[in-house]
Image (cartoon, rainbow, N blue to C red):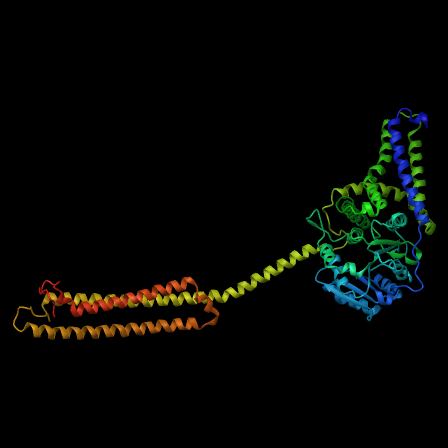
Length: 590
């Protein structure tokens, strides 16, 4: 060994230290796992399933596996089961629920599929002390609720989780399902260790987790839960279980995980390559949640320091995991060792197999046939390290990834709802404005008619005045019916007689003009009255534009009245003012 490392001391010593740290850390976890003990139910418990537990199941595409899961929930005797789905899926899910138990299973809906909104809808309809969220394919043990409720004997207990294992979709487990089972085994060890050491946990899995209803019915929680953004602009739909766990820690509630057969649940996983997409979504959620816990909220450092350290360890895990194969590849390329390259590779692989098998022993005791997939688990581990780095640089991608139709977030739904409301308001405004526009057109047409009538009246008056002037000029030029000169014999009596004739004639003409104008104005007023009788446009009649227009019309009519009065005075008395070339008296006709 010394001969192997004497020329590359600077390389092997850091790698050795990294390896020592990794396996020391795993040994601590393993010891804590062995010392962990689940909480046992009391003989006289405070909470009973039939009175104090409501199971809320958000789903959009529950299949036949739902029946098996629902029967397992009913076997635990809860008070009620509430299924939350989108509106278009209500009928098939109601039929599915009725086929299981129509009396204890209730189906509620939200407008569009969104897991967080569905969960909040279930919370609002919960009347029990404890609410349990479950996936539509989570199959429980008959004693699951008893062991979950045992933890709530602690008045400070806010949330409780369970251990998990894989249920195959088909008759046998595919390699993807075996890989999921390996991951769950390691997870069960980690959460049992953290629960035993400082009572904390990285995440209460959303497949099955119980909470005090009073915590989740807080309006502040519901608002933040449905308006959760990454970096303030990327709305989150998945990662609901991470959010709930952080909420418990930040607000001083305790958490616990029951890792035991009595509370273990079976859950299905993707049995094909789509399992990789599931893992990618979980990895992104873990990055986002851990960053918030460590650097934004920071409460976890004081409440659960061991859990905080495991989060820091996960940040550097891809680097430490990839350092081994990178070093071996570097030595293969350099090739200046006295040992054959293949000896180094085989030694490294055997070492990895031994250490990984130790981690997977609980799984292999239960399913020894899965030992053939340990090499696949090694390869997947390195792929997972690369995936974690990729996920770190794509945290802005917040979609669900494996299910269609549920990537709309609460914020997006709110924006879409607001957009729909605005569109409806615009349509209503257009509908309301259409009669007004029609009325405005009618008003303008009436106004145009009024203006035309007034113009016609003014034109007629002007024409009459012009005709009178022409007639007077003609009479004057032809000396017809002119008053006699004042210096002629009997001129005073003749002037008086002529003046009376002219005055009577002028009065008759003025009366005819006023009668014609009154008739025309009555027609105009009738049209305007019809317009004013419409109550829908009364408010519009008060507009400044129309008021100004009618004021101008009134002024024009007044001007015409004055003009007519002036004409009458001119006809009656115009010749007695000494302005005529034929009338030279200074006193006029009087």
